[in-house]
Length: 251
Image 1: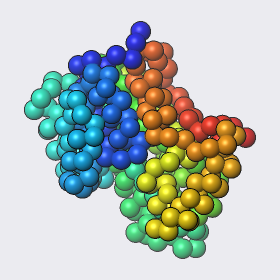
Image 2: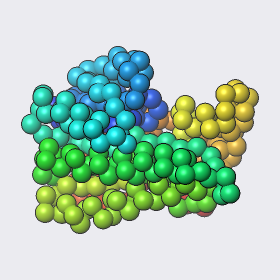
Image 3: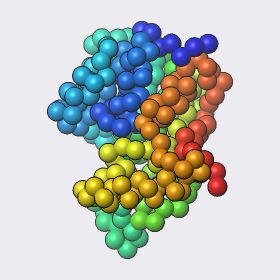
């Protein structure tokens, strides 16, 4: 049993930066055909160049069902099936109870819940029996975070998708697991503090103080966990939530 993905077909949504980019790079380095998505063509082109190997970029917003269809049309033009899906596209912003708008709610749920749901559902005709699906949840799904309740609720929904879908897909032996990162040093995290560099560093320092290991994580550390879940080494791992958080959710 290995983490050799030679000639496997892997789809990584939200693959232009942070965790998605690092994971796409790891799959490509392991020999996979990788399809990545991103909303902006310029960043998508840069990601494709950074990933290298056998990679195809497909511009799209995973909350838009037509864009998901275009993604799988692009896959089908080159391959007959998909071996791995990493449904990673997502994001969020702060809004305290009392200041949550319908727009904030809709945008967060559309991206993080609707997008994940239809990314996986629309892939079913292409997913091979015995394929692996990995969903990006978050430690916030089980912890309280001030002014972050909408995002946290979406990640709790994603975690339950893994539990429920293993029952829906059991006859096809498709494994579905969730990876739940703690604070990871990505643009998506630091931008929560706004554009000020000092405020961004302050956020990273604060988050590091919440982690028993005393630091924030790196995107490559999440990528290693995702490749494990996708690999034959995890052949009897199904429906779990793998925390990659330096112990943050365990205290």
